[in-house]
Image (cartoon, rainbow, N blue to C red; front, side):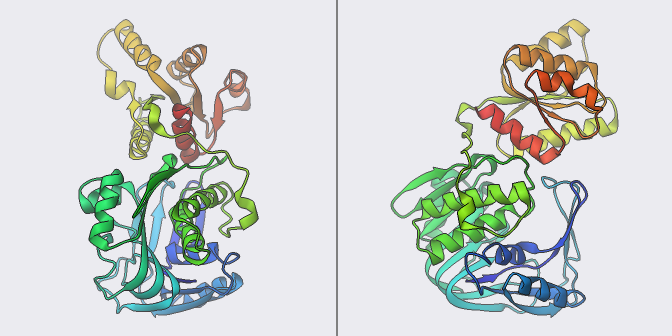
Amino acid sequence: MIIAGGVYREECIRPQWSRIFGSGGRAAAAVSLLSPGSKLVGYACSRWAEDARHSMAAFDVTADLKEIDDDIAFHYLHPLGQPELIGMPDMRRPSLVAIGEVVLRFGFIEGDAVVSAKRAIYDPQNAREVLHFADNGSTADELAIVLNQSELAASVGKGGQDGARELMARCKADVVIVKNGPDGALIVDRSDAGWVPAYSSGTIFKIGSGDVFSAAFAHFWGEERFDPAEAADLASRAVANYVETRNVQIERAGLEGRSAQPSSASGKRIYLAGPFFTLGQRWLIEEARRCIEMLGCDTFSPVHDVGVYGSAVDIAEADLAGLEKCGAVFAIVDGEDAGTLFEIGYARKLGIPVVALAENTRPESQTMLDGSGCEVVADFTTAIYRAIWAAHR
């Protein structure tokens, strides 16, 4: 397989992560066991291009990298955060060329790739590029487009199956895969449509999960000629392995044995329990709310939906009435706030699942959380996903 995609530095504060990967580099490494001898086509900063070549060689990947001056990096506070793009180039670089039987093309920051393939898989990486696979002269006998729900809606003005079919018509694509985070993915081809689930994982490291999905789908649909739904299902399983272990290489034998997560058909909300009395506390509530809603689940947040004005009785009654209508609780327990702990106990008495984010708590403080069946998680992104899945059950 040929992979045409960016090779960039990635930095994350929590959890700590510092690698040279990018979509192209990660995808090439991901398929290295499934498709030995794959080729990566991309650009790379001249200061570390040779390091990138050696890293790819360790995966048995040939790296055809055009050296440039720009040192492009993505800096994350956490994997669900909005990354800061460092080193944005002043100009677009001349196009690269990728010719082969099966080519996976990603969108680039600094340029693009002209593709000629029998089967091409296109992951545009941003809404501005979704409709433009052929604009640079790229051709394919068969084309699959892999993108997320927000990119689809931004590019054609609507999401879901209707948006996917419009995208197919406008781009003359044969398959459209719409990734939807904890809900799995929508698969639409010329004759059918369906869903594949997300699969369970104990921890979730989100950076690069979409790259692994696209790489796995490209191999199973492009090279092994599986039907789109089966290829997407295997890709979803590969993502579950990656986000749990951070091991980027996909092993065919390791794709079985995971449980499918339920979809969000229930439409239940998530209750946000946590202190909001300092700037740091309020920021964490705001960030949790943003991330949960970005992933397609509604929230009930006492500070937003009830407020802080009124008598203690009125506020408590409104908060608890909202909690009773929720499908799960996302609780921030650092600091052991009394109101948060009360809400957790109230939820557990009602049988409502609780996912508690505990980054810095005393072990003895977790006794009642563990003993009452709360799921205690030390990682923010993992806690967000586990709360959404708990609400779907």
